[in-house]
Length: 306
Image (cartoon, rainbow, N blue to C red):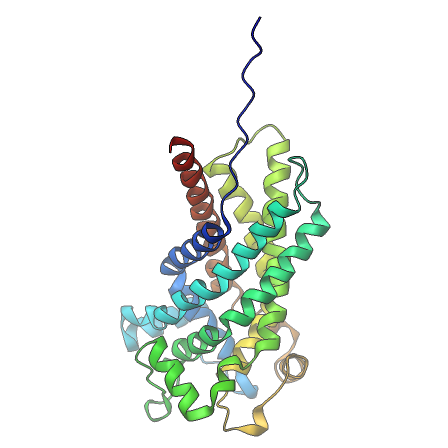
């Protein structure tokens, strides 16, 4: 009697495609959530330096932007957001998936601690590569809240980076790198590890099979955890990167900025803009991972048939 055919082992995805799929998934996600990024950044700048808050809620801010600047103003900084994903997300997801597969033994995935460590390492690498686009994004999305005579009026991310280098020096493109890398460590430890762990746990219950619904539920859990633990660092990073380099007195580190925010505005300020942040990071997490899973599945189907 002939033995039943053995299940075919999935063909590994080449590293170049891991990076490509990661970046493409992140960029597609950004096209959906860019308005939330703008609202998040402006809410975080509101009340800076002890000044009165410009807007009490995200809804008020949304209405104000549309009324004063027009609906398309919600997509200010989109080019910088796309470049950030092309650099940051491409690097972090590519490195994470490469290390994840490298550390998988006999089809047994790495444990939660290992997932967390490789997530943090991937995030730090991606943050360093993506910081110039991050600086441009913060400034482009925050520009509309300034008086007309103080606006930078960058045309696009390329114009922003050229002018930043010319007017403030090349090193300004990596301004707030420590804060960006610290945030990336927290985000990736939470996002990548909890996504993988949530997917594994949900699958083990027997109520979920591999597919879109499992990816969606895992992303929802991952996005909530990620938003909660990373928002304080994100607020400090946003304010550091928005400061003009010529203002030397305002140059500050992550710890100093966090301390100043708590002292001048209260500890709850560290979670200011939670709703637009979650509405940005939650859906972006979902869209990114859903697209990433679909790209991986499509590649495996294509490679199996050719």
